[in-house]
Length: 164
Image (tube, rainbow, N blue to C red; front, side):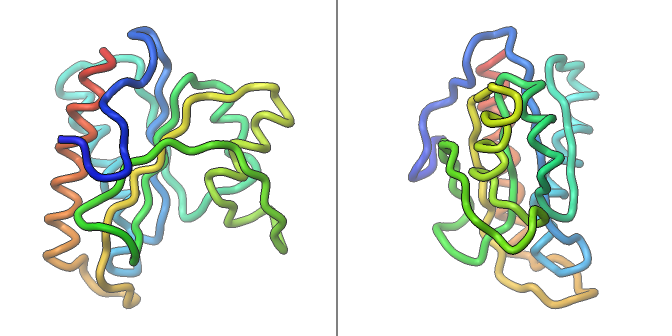
């Protein structure tokens, strides 16, 4: 399955070091989709004994994450979104520095630009956005978001298996 806005599964050569990085707030309903996907994918990779994958998650992206990008050949950022097509969109990113009030809560394109500037590295970077519907604090993930998460997880497993 290749969703709109994505390329076919090919994350480079078979020996690529791949980072799956989810971000979002687990305490705000569907906002935690990125973190939930990383947790599920990490369990799957351990059960299947898949090597070459690293996992990380955080509340938001920061300048410090540029180093993690520099240490990998391929990076897949995973985040929830209130916009776009359901159940998810998978697309390649290009470096793009943006000016912000702070280096906290950076866009993935800005982290990639910082990686290129500081470490002279430009890994292949993808963004998987999973459609969420509700963002209330201290509320459970919506059933629709759970279904979107399952679809995104199934897609990413296939995409990663194609790189092994």
